[in-house]
Length: 414
Image (tube, rainbow, N blue to C red; front, side, top):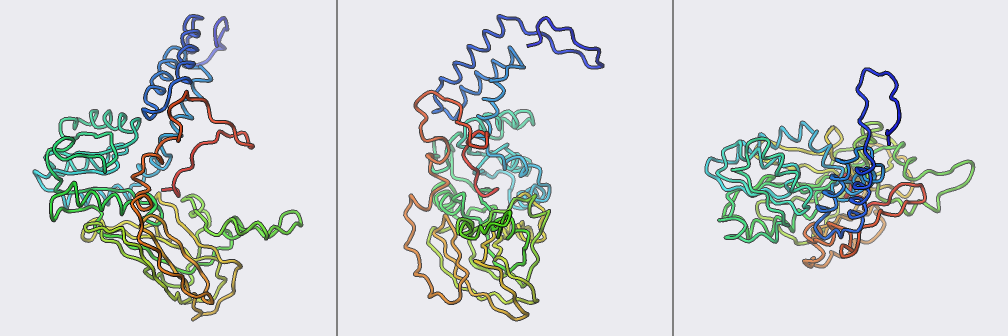
């Protein structure tokens, strides 16, 4: 509170003091926010906290709770994704190439509304964009309205599998746009989502953006990565018995840029996916990666390429500087390799998750059983979108041992 304080001389005007009545009202609103259930995705809680901060912009608890609420319900990868100019330009070009005047467009995963607005700009008659998180959907409506497109874009605050033709959309879509992939394409349930959308929400022969995707694997030398994820010792103590917890490294874009792995050989294709005719059938492949140069093998790096439209693609490979992270499957121990050395691996997926084993001496694993809807449709499951208990009052998450608030982790750096 700044009441009864004399501000020091400054070129900037001092913030106005808050009256005791305003402070009491703000405290009351914060108490209501903490007692409000989150079944609406945090909408009412956010409104109460915003009202409290309008009365008292310096209210400490309201600031903390609002930030915690936003971090819980609005994944942080949205922001670097929106700032990824190469990704934005590729989607803009693909949408301009594939959306025709008069098209009905379904945009899955609205976010801030960028791809929906690109479709409207490309000439779509109307764009229906779905966003299951109410806070994000509400913000998207504001973004769309501020850009003068509210009459041509409808934000549907639902999961795509809940959309009903004739109710939410007047007719099936001519074009389906999505960007619901993680570092290995599968983790946000793209295949299950698009299988439903192309079958139930789109016209026969509908166009899709992206069109196809493929996963690639290549051997890499990455001493910094191995040391970061599997440090051999600390202060003279052997830590190797702890390493089995870190077989798969999720690498943030910043970490990747700071210490990029060195390729030891060409990438080989593991799987391909047709997003125009998607399937949730499982996949199994065995590959032999050849090292084209000597070095120390620390990991197998798995990356993706997506074709958005003919001649337009995005990827998170070694040369990419976009917002996507990477996934590396670490060797049990670094291995010196010579030119021509071969790394044998087995890769499997169940349409929602990828597994990869690097061990040429083991027998090939049995192919996975066909995925059930509940396994393949992780991205479609509303239980994963919000905290499990949304019926009771909202209390601040308990601090972790390090003193940071405990919040749900986000998927693989998108």
